[in-house]
Length: 77
Image (tube, rainbow, N blue to C red; front, side, top):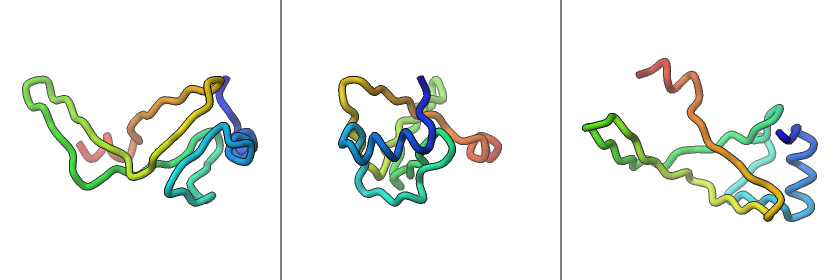
């Protein structure tokens, strides 16, 4: 199940989800905007990119998450 904006806020209040640093403005319809660190690693042979978020995220055992790139970044190449 994908959490709604209100369900994300509730999970944070209940301690099931923690993000640091965090601002409530990062929560959108059914996602949380994260920020990438400046330093990334590009493995050229397969075009693979490793990156780290500025936020530390913790989830309770009954939640899971996934991270994917934004379309605006993909359009930049």
